[in-house]
Structure formats: C-alpha cells, structure tokens
Length: 364
Image (cartoon, rainbow, N blue to C red):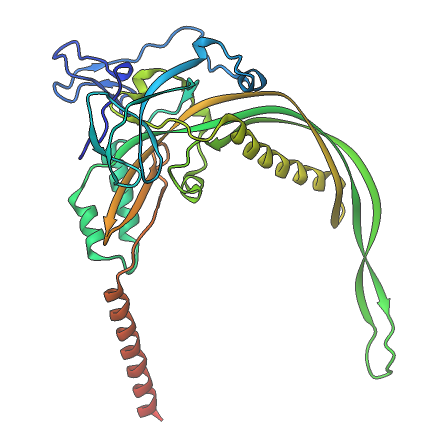
C-alpha cells in the first residue's frame, strides 16, 4: 500500500477549494492540496516559543492536562511500532518492517510533542537519495535494484525523540601525568645509550560546571539504534513549536521509551562529555580519573518529532529497511547479498589472476 496509515482527525485540514485533505508540503513549508493544487500557509502565533517541561513533575505525573494527549495507535506484532492511525482503517502494513497488521486502535495517553522539525525533503527527493545509495552497493541482488527502479513510494514518518537540558556540577579526583625523558647508559661498550620516556604523576582534584542543551535520545524501539545514529546529526536549530499541520499527510510514531529510561541514556551521554572535560582540565600528557561525583540540577525535557522517510523491502522472507533523514538526506539501510554475483566476481578474479600469471610467465 502506498499510504499504509491515514492521518488522525487532528491532522486533517480540508481544502477550502475542493474539500480534500491537505498535506504538508516540504517545498513551500505550508499546506498543499494534492487534488486541486491549492495552497495554504501554516499560521504562526506571535510570541510562540518551544516550551521546556519540568522533568521531576513529569516523573511524579504532575504535568498539566494541557501537556498530555490521548492518541489511538496500532501496535505492530513483529517490531512493536506504535503508529497513530485513523480509526476508519482496519488492515494495513507496518512501515517499519512490512508486516501485515490488523489495526487495534487502542487509546494511549502520552506527553504531547512540544516541537517538530518539519520535512525538508520531498518524497521524490528522498527516493532519489535512496536510489543513489542502492546504486553504490556491490553484490546487491537484481531484485533489490528492481525495487528501487519501480519507484515504490517511501513513507514519511515523524519519529519521537526526547531532548534534555540540565545544569551539572562535578567534583573529581585523579592524577596528571607529565612525560619526561631519561638517558639510560648501555651496559655494553659497543651499544649506544638509550633514551626512555617516563611519566611523572601528580595527584589532582578539581571542580567543573557544565550546562547541557538538547541532549537528544531516541524514544522509539522500532528501528535498530545504529540506523538512527547514522542519520545524525540533526539540525536542532530548525525545531519549530509543534503544530498538527506539520503532520498532515504523514505518519507519526508514539514513543515507546519512557521518559525515565530516556533520561538514563541521556545522563550516560552527559557523563561521557563530563569525563572529557575532566581530562582537559587535568591537562598534561596523560590523565587518570579516580573518582567523579556529578550533581544534576534544573532538568527539563521536550518530546520532539523528527522527520524520517522509510521503506521496508522483503527479500526471500526477510525484511530489509531503508531510512532517509528527512532533513539532510542521509541514508542508512540493510542489504542482502547476491550469492550469484559474488560467485561470478570470484570467477572473474581467478581468471584475471591466471591471465596475469600466464603473461608474466611468458615474459621470462
């Protein structure tokens, strides 16, 4: 199916000319009617800004009702993707793994998105990027290349992420290593003296402060993490306050990584950055870190949606997925290997080697 899921009622905007559902158009950054071509700008409210939410209040379920929403989702039985669906649709195909799904439109209560990066790439542009990537694959089966040539449409999906801001204060202890050279006399008269490098260690301690902004953590389990990591970096400066118009004509995945688990991953990223800061602060040629105590304050977060074009392709019973960053055009995917093409390449390689060997032998 070219359109496996339809937008929910919140994301439907009837065209004033023909009444058809309008869709967000990356080229104009507004709404476009796919039937009559009518356009409509997305209104912007004066003073509208992206809100940060209090992390501790969210953990204590003390967020305001206006920060929560109830969505109806379909859960894929294979990859467990949670996709917002139109209740009118009852059978479809999962865009993450191409598994047939009979939709169970159960209600889920989740934290509302605070921000979104709208799609910059249109579907044809994303498909061109994927085809260029596929064209560089050696030993890919002809069926995979045929899949690209057929031009099956990609699904545009907004994938959920958490972003975290925090102020940190760190107290550390360690040691600074400064290298020096020392001349070692040779015990044998026929051998020269040697110069060896040694390290002089000095105990150190210190304090550091660091403010973190928009530490980004994937809030979905539907895609392997190497996929989403490969799509980075994201231009977070392009975040806009969430408006349902940006989702019109696209799919939206609900988050399946809890806020608390998301912060655990974000905190690990912060800790790694703090250890880099400590090594720079210690200085010298080498550093040892023996203890680190970090205090984290003023934690805030956002639920944001980032744009991904996606295709799922089945080859000999196995699903292969391709994802395209809807902002930058970066591509990541899986690929099968053609045993026939590999065998042919081996035979050609052997023939080339035998020809070179024969030529060299005749020249002697």
